[in-house]
Image (cartoon, rainbow, N blue to C red; front, side):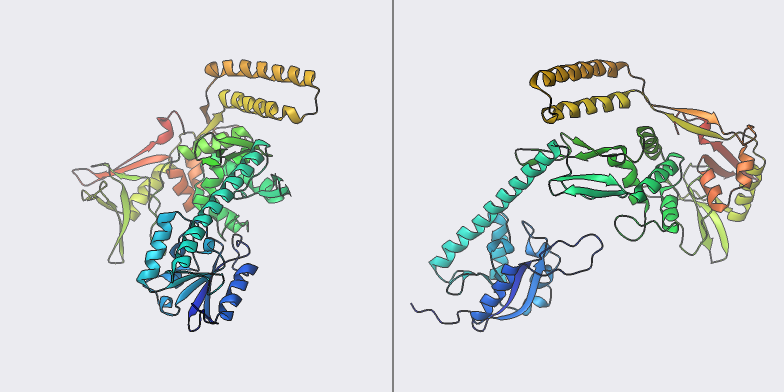
Length: 492
């Protein structure tokens, strides 16, 4: 059987390609495709085809074509571009997928359903699906399985390399936290604090420790011109991620890798880096975050925040009360009811009346102001010492000691570790101590003084330490109670 000189004559095709580099966070640049993908286009044009588009993504592997950012618009069965071409040309099958047989079965069904050809570069018009003859069938079957095997092999090599780097205490990838830079050569990388991290990270932890809302901290960082690692503005979520991150206390956490498989959430190992905060501050900020009260609902953007939102509750049914504007003129606090199907009990009071009652009460409040001080226990410190000894034991073979000295040092470290492990059961736990806040003249600060010196945002923050309830008496006089949460709590 003779083969035409241009087997792809009259076929409109797109090239399934791979970008030469993955865009970094914030980059909007489209990087060029790999050289062999460019040659695939030239090959198909020489075979008589007409190139009508390029579907190039860095993300490929086992990801289906319709789940890739730039390819999905070409293969979507409900889109317009699917009618603009007849075939997908690729230099290798792995440009289409590196999935399992069932993944390829889905792609093959898509091709048949939409009357598309999948063409892999090769002689006599390449390897085509749907198959033109037995040779196409067997070559397509072999190449798609080879693509999967290559992916598994690459993945195993990558995992083993990461495991080796982590075993040597080196950085093996992952996002770089705010305040750190990657330092070192390809297989000898670690994280080093930068000047921005040294200046701002301790301040972030201190503010969380003191109970400042995460949204307020994000707003403060934006006002100071501090840029987050990703994106343009800070958010409460990004602040929380910093507080939860063990890197800032010197422990880069990573999932352990065993036999080429990542044990997610299991066997967590630590890579030591230079810390930006002390363990005491890190624990205090995390404890404060764990016990932070829920904030109120965010009101309309064109309103000033209500003074009592998030702290006001109905004295009749105990449900939260929120601000409500009626006919654009009258403003009330209204009982919202309980979830999951909130329906208020009808309690209603004008905002101006209740705010004035609370303001008058706070101005007359001579109670002392208390603050919580975190007293770290011994367990975390003992565990940190045990971890350091484990790292020293792991690194002993590379210490340059003689065999006898290495054995002696190993035995000494093990003895210290056993002693520390025996102390953990009786270690003093973490605790919070409540104390009076003193002014510069060493006299106690009162709630009234704190209230008078605060603006609206400061007063809203102050009231988060109270539970305010409202109800009407039978004589229609307001009943307002203000219970300080710290008066009954053993922890912040």
